[in-house]
Amino acid sequence: MTRRKADIGKTRKSRLPEKVKALLLSDPDEADFSDDPLVRKIEEAFEGWTLEERRRWAEEWREKHRQSK
Amino acid sequence: MTAILSVETNFIIGIVWEQRPVLLRIKKLCEQLGVLLAVPEIALAEARNSLLQRIERHLIASQQFRFWLNDIARAAGMREQVRQIKRCLDGIEAELQRRKQLILEALEMFAQACTIVPLTPQVWARAYVRWKANMPPFKELDCLVAETLLEFLRKRRVKLSLFLTMDAEDFDHPELHADFKRHRTNMLFDPYAVIVEFRKFYGVA
Image (cartoon, rainbow over all chains, first blue to last red; front, side, top):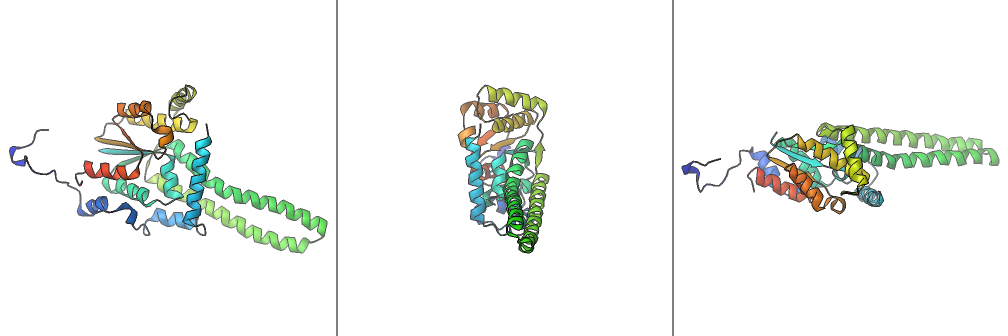
């Protein structure tokens, strides 16, 4: 696409809403998902099992997958 | 639709079992940005089986326990005590069944936010040939995932197409990179790299 002469030198601007832009730029590891319905459902299903335990299960699954053919 | 993010079983396991914030963030970004999140049907089935197996394991243990209890009730004449223990087991089993149902509901919720790519007989045949010919990603299930996605991407024309897999051991091979490149899809192994690509594509880098 050709750029208008007046636009040359300008940075490409995003047309995303500010809320989405902030989400895209924020640190993904510091997000709070407590209001996410999927997360709430997952936490209800695994209540009583710690996250560490569940992460160990995931590792076990990966190991099993690694050994599969 | 201007962008597609294809994922495999590790993404589902990472969300449902591990609740990895970065994967939850990617899912949310896909919803907010209107990125199509493509999940192979076989990957969803694989994740569902592994999640349910974990609960099944406890239910099987409970059944075995009942068998031993019957033996104790008969041989040691402790019918009333055994009946009490069995009542507790009834409660445990009912709770495990409830958890199973909740896991299925969680997976259904996840599936509703994605586009589930079906496993067709043609895809299955191509995956079988790939697997038999010992081509990457080598494993039968991974071949099914790869062929399902390649077939899906073949028909799609989008400006940004990414395939996120956390299984570099099986998928990081030049032949597979080339296969996905043919369908204008970039294969990535790090979820953070997906966010970086989104930032660049949407001009907020």
